[in-house]
Image (tube, rainbow, N blue to C red; front, side, top):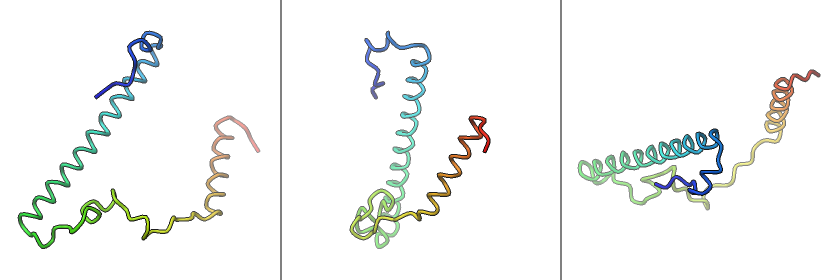
Length: 104
């Protein structure tokens, strides 16, 4: 796995930037490891099904991994209610005002 930081660029980084780059690399590595672990776990499950009860084995990849592959033709894009969005934006604006110490 590559760190993504060029050796020449490294010497121009501050201590804080180096720490942030290292932490980012570690976080990305952890997420990729979790993804691989999930895939291995699912593969083990599919192997178990194919050995113990082949009739229950998924017929296609969409059924084997339902959250990974979605058929866009079957699903309509979900439209979020404008009133919900308006309320969320208003709440966020109030949060920002409180954070900055502003009052109404």
